[in-house]
Length: 85
Image 1: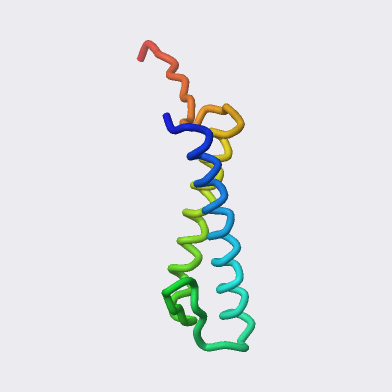
Image 2 (image 1 turned 180 degrees about the vertical axis):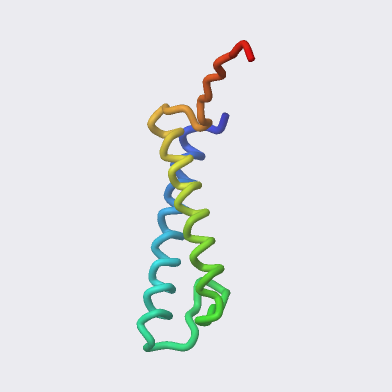
């Protein structure tokens, strides 16, 4: 298990990452620009599918670190019910 300090840093990182990805998607879909720069990476309209996947992944990871910070379980709990078949 990671420390809450590390979880806070990672949560903040993914919060910033989500903001960057949303800004890139908005800029590319508005039709005003043909390319957009995120950090040292340049993306185009052809990268929208990949940006969408990266955004989904960042949201999942942010939720994971949020659960750690709130003391909630990070894995799904599944119950198994035995049957006589």
